[in-house]
Amino acid sequence: MEKLLKKCILLLVIELCSLATAVVAEQNSEKASNMPIFIDSRLLVLAHPLFSAFDSKSKRFKGTSSESFEEDFDSQEAFIQSIKDLEDELLKSPEKLKEKLKGIPFKDRISAEREFLLEKKLKESKLEYMKRRIYLSRLVPTKDGMTPYMSIYPQCRDLAEAIKKVTDSLKKKYKTDIVIDVANILPYRGKLRTRPRELVNNLVKDAYKKESKASAEDLSQWLKVANSYWAARLGMNADIIPVGARDVRLEAIKLMEEEGKGYKLWN
Image (tube, rainbow, N blue to C red):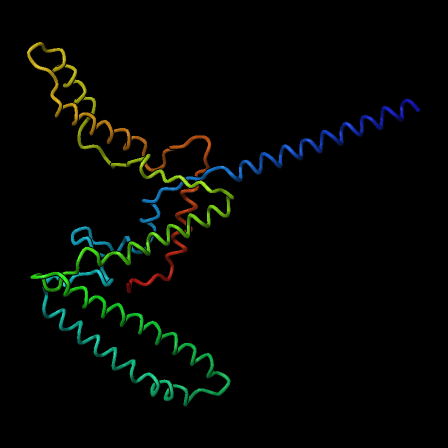
């Protein structure tokens, strides 16, 4: 009887230990799922189709309504003629649809009509973009063909909305309300043009001279180079937040690439 009682107690202890382990594991899992995540908004911008369309010289997006005509009168006239041609084509859409459906069996007409309407919708969207571009190109006084700076707002809005969709998706997946953008924490500057060691040595030598001291300009230059040095040494793959947050930068890029598929520059 005593042996049976000890066995029952032992089984009870084992059961309680298993239950406690399961509870702790569940709590740890919940804590891990609520852990903050971090992304790099610069990488998300690079992954969006709009980035490849951005012209750093004109500060506009090529192929969008923000693109200027650069005072090229002939190209503007040709563009206006393209608008008229597209308008005429859309006006003739009902007749074209009737003509297209004549040689198609009745059972296949629904899919053919759906395809035609989809093409028509895309052309209407393109027409809207073309009209907007012409309108914007006439807003800057004395500079015919140039679009104003505010013309890039629609593209910037699309970029912001795409980043928000990606971050919202990641927040939902990892059950967290905190998303850290490491773009400001990790100001990557690329390759160094100045060797920081040489600059530091020169400043130290000047500091020991009785006649002269390092000027504020020299110190400012040193701080600037030091900042670039650390940023370049860390690189884009730096483990900038080693503990306390989950690195989802690569996952965010993949989501942005998916988000950008099928994106039309007609904005």
